[in-house]
Amino acid sequence: MFYYVLKYVILGPLLRLLFRPRIEGLEHVPEEGAAIVAGNHLSFSDHFLMPAILRRRITFLAKAEYFTGPGLKGRLTAAFFRSAGQIPVDRSGGKAGQNAIREGLGVLSKDELLGIYPEGTRSHDGRLYKGRVGVASMAVQAQVPVVPCAMVGTFEIQPPGRVLPRIKRVTIRFGAPMEFSRYAGMADERAALRAVTDEIMYEILRLSGQEYVDRYATEVKAELKAGTAEQHRHRLVH
Image (tube, rainbow, N blue to C red; front, side, top):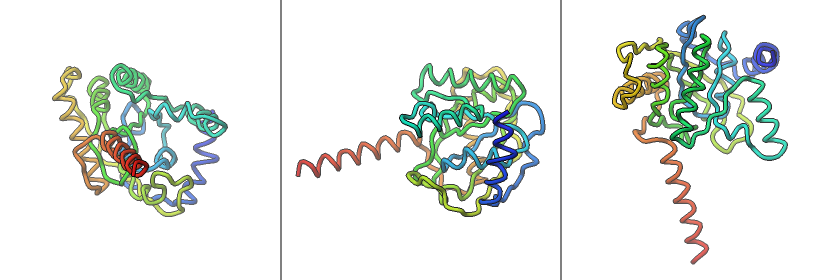
């Protein structure tokens, strides 16, 4: 119930009023039945803007950190995401990744919309990074269409580190549903999953117009963090 009050009475109308999103290709999102909406991830605002303009409810796989933050802010954030029906996902890899896929398949088994960011994390510089194969695994196992989605302008309104977004118009663009029935029965084949994921990422790239980086964003972020730490240590020593 809270989800629908939030979407149709409180947050949805407010976001539409403030950001006046340009919506392109909304007809590509199925009006019923299971489907995956796979998008780029540029800003914390993405979590709210895309669901606000969809006619249907969408459940996102959200990073577990949103549910475990400290203090009052952490508790409020966790309460919000739980009330909105979002599913916490451990991004540590391995078994945690399989649990995330299982959760996603559970949503699809109920003929619902599942939202996922194949990059696995927000872009720190506005570029599009290599996709993780979880989206392909779910699409192939559940045999459901994947609707590519591009958020355009959300990095500019709320880049990493900015708490409150700038009030500026954004664009939300959906592409034609993609189907992967030709890969049926190949959910355990890494090469097949990589091919499906790359095809999805190409469509997101085409819709968004971003620069593409053929590396995982988490790896690049880790390198940048390590470099910053080393620079700090070097300054302390000298």
